[in-house]
Length: 597
Image 1 (tube, rainbow, N blue to C red):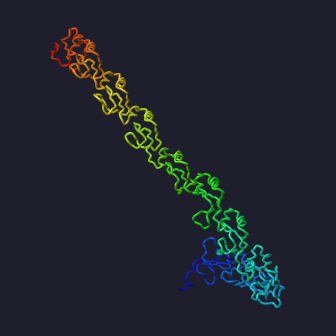
Image 2: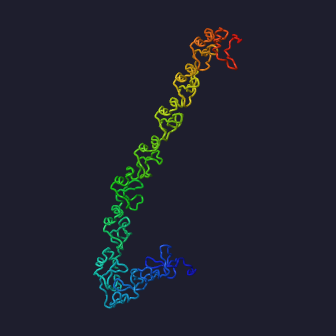
Image 3: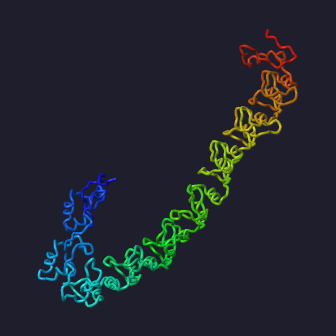
C-alpha cells in the first residue's frame, strides 16, 4: 500500500520540544520533518515550523530548524580553543543558545579580525611553523570534563587542537588540579589521556537512596553504586562515616549498616507500630525473612527503651516479646470472655493484655464466673444462686425442676432462696421457699383451711396452694383468721375429725360425731358448739329442757304435743314465720304430730 496516500493522524501543526527543536503533530512523519503525536493539553500549536522555532527566543533559529529535520545547521561557532568550528556531525554546537555565523570568515572576525591563521586552522588546515605549545588546557567541547594538549592533531589522541587563548599548564596533572578541582584526579587523567586505562572509580563514597555507595563499577563489589563521571552533581567522601554524616535525613547508624554489605543491621531496636512490638535491627541485606530498620525508624539501645518511648500504650510484655506469644490474656471481640495469647496472630498494638483470666474477666461486660469458666475452657453451669422467675425463685443452673436455666445477663442473683423470695413482696415467702414442693402449711378456703400438700394422712383435706395465697403453720392459726366461723369446727373440718360436741339441729340438738343415733354433720362451720346436750338444749328456751335433752341424747325428735300449752305459745312466738310455699320439716318421728286445729 502507498503510505503517501494515507491520511496522516494528527493536526499537522508544530509543537516545541525541551531539547530546542520542534516536531510536527503527526503519527506518521512527512519527509525528513520529525514528528510525534502531541497531547491535547499543555502544548502550544504553531502553523509553521518557522513560527514554532521563532517562539523560543533563547534558541538559535538555525539550530532549531536544522534539528527539527534531524540535521545540523552547517553554520560556524567559536570553539573553546580560540578558533571556529562547524556545526556538523562530530563537532556539533555545544548548546542551543550558542551563536552561529554564516561562514568561517565571519566567525573568525568575531574572535580576532587580525588573526590571519584562524580561517585556515578552523577549516583543518596547517599553518607553517605553528605546531602548538604542547601544554595542556581545559577542553570545553563536548563538555568540560577533561584536559587536552595544545598541538596539531596528527594522530595524537590527546591533542585538542591549537588554542589561541586561555590558561595552559605544563602537565595534564596540573591542568586537572587547577581547572577541575572538584573532579577525582584519576577520572580527569583517564578522560584526558588515551593511554591511561579505563577509569574504575575512586573507591570513595557518595550518597545513594538510603545508604552510601562506593564509586566503582557495580559488578565489581556489592557496595559499588557505579562509577561517577559527572561530579557537578555528586560529592565524593573518603569513607562511609563522613558520607553518612552528610545525609541529614538518615540516621547515621542505619546509613552505616545499609552501606556495609556484610552488616546484619545496627543491633539496635526499633518499633513495628502496626504489629505492636519492638524488634532488634539484626537482619542481613536483601533477606526477605526478617525486617531491617529503615530511614523513618527511631533506634533505641534496649528493647525496653523502645517499648517505653515508641509504643507506650502497648503492654510491655507483648512489646518486648517481639511478637511472640505472651501467654497473657485479652478479651474476645464480643467482650464476653478472655483468650490466652498462645498464638501470635493478633494485633498487639490495639490489644489490652492482662496477667490472668480473672483480671481480664473483671473488665468484661459478661458475668465474672461465666467469663472465667469460658476463658478456661470449662462449661459454665451457673452459680447455684437464686433469681426470680415469674412467681417463684429458681437456681442459676441448667434448667430442671429447681433450676431456671443459666443466667448470662444482669439478672439480680441472691445467695439464698430466702433472700430471693423476700424480694417478691406479693408472694408468701413460705410458698416461694418450698416451690416446687408443697409447703405442708395451711391456707384458708371457704369455711375451713386446707393443707398445702400432695397427700394427707387420715381424713385431713389437702390440695396444692396457688401462688398468692397466705400460708399458716397450723390449722388453729389459719382458722383464727376467719372470725365469721367457729374456729373449733374449722380446725376439726380441716383435720377431718369430729368435735363430739353438741349443736342446735332442726328440732333438738345433735352431736358432731361420726357414729350413733345422736350424731350428725354440722350444716356449716358457723354453728355454736356445746359440751353437753343439756347445755345445747338450754339455748332452745322454747323447748322443755328435760324432754329436749332426752330426745337429743337418744337421737330422737321432740314434737309440739310433748310441750305444755305455755311452751307451745312460747314456741309459736319464738319460731320465725314459715316460708310462703312450704312449712318447716322436722326430723322424722314415729309419734303423731299436733294438728293445727
